[in-house]
Image (cartoon, rainbow, N blue to C red; front, side, top):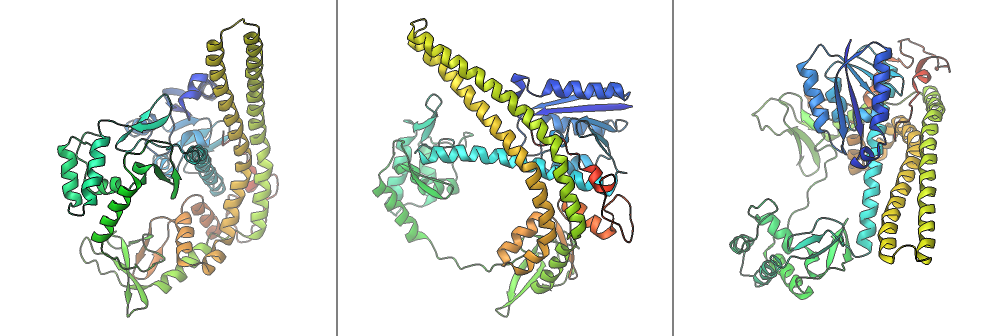
Length: 506
């Protein structure tokens, strides 16, 4: 049978170190040989993929569309194939048979409901791990901000120094920025005139085009030009050289205030942005009637479709029932959590093994540093050579420490996040009925997507893995087969048998 293989590492550094790709290829090819599969194409990805749209992933999807006779994908494990829900949906629409070798899992359209249920949790956990990595980057940026260094790309008027990793004044552009502030502070120039002025002076955007009015206003409101900068809604005192004075900046902000008009406060609608019209597909909007009644109706961008107006209370009641449909029976919840904890053993062994390897590497590098220090004291090496090599090894030590930290986080996240998902499904309805509109929106956005409203009836579409939970609740099918009175799954059959996750979050 014809098959393709897909292997991926999350960074170029991993590829250069041989951290993962060779091992994946050997595992997949040995499996194909053993099962008499003919590999007709290999897709290897070496890049970070925070969003769907990876180059080789897209090439693989196109290849499968063009070659419908190929129906099998071989992949090491869940988080190697897709990192978000969009990837999952794209692959699911191709009607394939997917072999996750390390997890011992084969999925296709005929897979039982509990297999899909567990797989949905794996997809969500894979995305969660990516989010954890993103959080580590954000921590580093925050530390840089707190030390006074601007933690992002240089704004207009500054440039990034690749040696010091700090921003410095762009002497060609800074005088234009200064003049723009001076002109607007006079109160007689509009944003349009300022934009025209800087363009005539030679100021261009990143792609060489005109800086438009909205961008120009952002520049004139940015405190970075007088020596401070805003990061994550907090103001920090920067160590970079300012282009303007604080007094000039304040004068510009007063000029903005004198030209601005007060804006009325918008009403808070609990379900705005969560519903589309079931008749024409347009968005549903909300408005106030008689000063207090909130109604939802189709925007009518494609013409009148005849969909009725619906009171917010009616939608609220239905949303509550929709969340009640993912409430897992208490006995099933406890057995599923128990199975998740038991399956953590294999996954933990994998991460513990990687941590041991990294710790040994750490010791080797530290020994090299200690030995080189002695050589420096003995005069065997020069001071400049010592500093250069020590700098390289210290950066390597930091990289190893970060890798150890990621594996430790993955060890905890595997069991903790899986249990949180199950527990959220259990209490979602009770949370919903007690919450304020803004909190209801957050909860619904996490559980649901693309819900439609037609003639007063809400039709839900659940995000993974809640769609699988809802299906299991509706069919009473927690053991892979339907039954009116299913007993809790025992340790040799049913849902617990499908909880062999393997090392998902490396």
